[in-house]
Image (cartoon, rainbow, N blue to C red; front, side, top):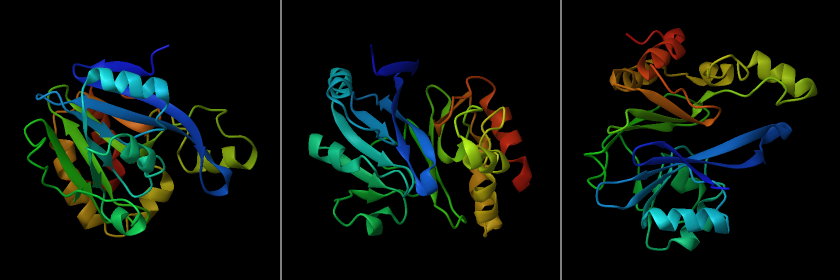
Length: 233
């Protein structure tokens, strides 16, 4: 069975193993692979690198950019860096300080590097005390990539007291939502609103998230609903 699933032209998704976070909460994992016009691969939020997955990745093209879109998504960076020493690692703000064992080519900002600026836009969503997330927009497919600011788990995913907390945290809503803990953690709402203005102006057709099913139509309308609580004008 193929690990990579075609999501849009030149964009593939792959689901990884379930990982256990704080307090025993288990999270599904997902990454995206974008093939740039020159044939190089842009790896977003890398998952565990199995032998089968590596074979499929290598068949698509050379891995040139490995993206850690926030400082929480670093679990598998070491194995990717070892497997693709010629690739550049790109870190979300504060990740380089957390992972001095890794050599990062850049810290991601609002300005996309020349390597992909014609094909992928990006925006640093700051003002959150949990993590600073970098959101990406693949122009050709109209796909926006979110990491942790949007999440959705099926009912029954969590058990016992964790199920209650997940429900109260809005993690099991009918559509992907901003978890309540992230809403509270937006201490600097002005900074967040300014960043999300840019994101909400992208002509999003689809939205891919690391923890939950993608939104496959009317992405811009969906994102406006998802962030309505923040009152982005």
